[in-house]
Image 1 (cartoon, helix red, strand yellow):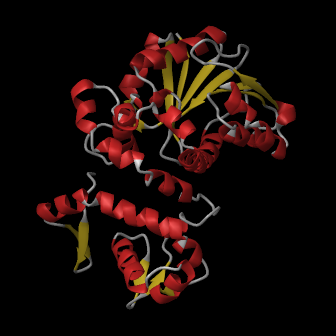
Image 2: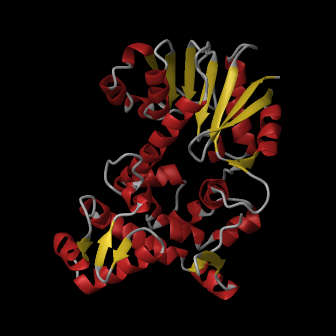
Image 3: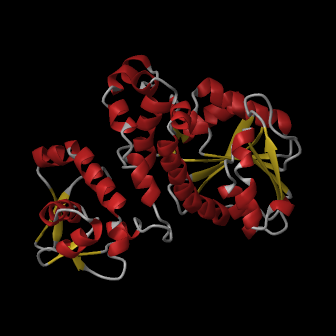
Length: 348
């Protein structure tokens, strides 16, 4: 079903008139800005113990009461908070996800989407549509990850967002796939080991290799040690465009392939194919775009890939083609409890 705005009339939802739907779609940036502002102010945390008035929230956040009310009224109109009476606000299932450190928290993700580089990049998106090349480099003067390295504050926000998102995906993946017959799992491009940690915790027989750039893997030692997993996890630094560790039963790549164009994505997968035996398995944790007009997170993220990184989200057919090019055949796609799927492939 397409994403449409609706209103309740006589107990039933009715689509809004097309001009009003279009207006609301154009104001997505306004809603996002208000959402980021409320997240920075910690409004969801303040409402965790029960409803409060906008005046009380303003006192606790050192803001102007009438102005804060206007922001919260907007967010309540789209379901983030709920206005009870006039000027009194309560938590909703959406705002509960904005609580710092709460279960499934997406607080850092919201802050990341509010970074100035995104609207600056999207405003110049016509360049990407005309050329097929990411425009972010032209806007900020560097590739995304180089920019974040040069701007540590924004880099910290970005990394925290990836960790927030990754925790939910990691648990969903570890529950959705049967790792019982796997002895050695190699997590390629695994960052600080969020996914590998979840799989190891739920599969005590399994040993893993966390593989990423040397400085990235170095940052994984402390969290893996704190989780008590270093005795079952080897940390290896390297470049997955050159080679990946050999000897794994299963190679898993989570939200890696979508960052890259067809040529570089195929190169990474070929390095995995070179490292594994004919009995090995490859798992890609990615959004798989469905056909038709269905609203899907992958369709939104694909615009980010187009304009910012030069990668792409893919359909099942596009993954089949990419895997075939790298020497694999797609065997199955498993939907997880998260927006991500597990694409299983075997050597062709």
